[in-house]
Image (cartoon, rainbow, N blue to C red; front, side):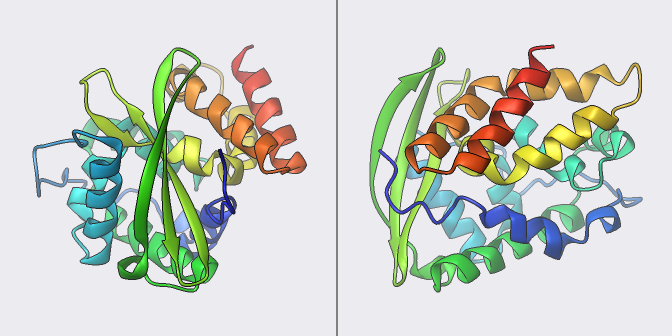
Length: 228
């Protein structure tokens, strides 16, 4: 199912270039409002629109093509900040925070594929069911190799880019450390991460298929922590 997955490890670059603790919430955490439509009608459509939005810098559109709870978690785990998590949940994702994340993401794609976002061509989708959810691996190609993006069918009957299923191998070590460091009573982020368990399970399965033993161990450790 997995084919030359250059996406594994991609967001490790994003974390470095985003600057860790520098991603504190700004004083104007105004939710992005470029579109009120979330997700896409098909897995292919949502990945295509997401990549197109990143290519032309419409980061507000990119925001609503992904699983929103995952996006908040990924932004917050960079700084191991519960305060940032709470601010993002309460106030929304500000344009500056969103732009910083996605601009680094675009640079990461170029670093791993040797191509810009505009040069990534979608090939097709391979739908599958796992852990009680409906997913699809959307295959794409670039001048240097292939890229796989996982989409998930949401409760709203629309498809969303699943950042954790796609890049969970990169983020598992950070999430594991975050869970260890959470102060007593900080249940909300832990519960939110637990709600994404199916996506993390898919990330672990993809790591196994790709022969990524270290990533598999990290994801198994994180899943064990979430199980209590």
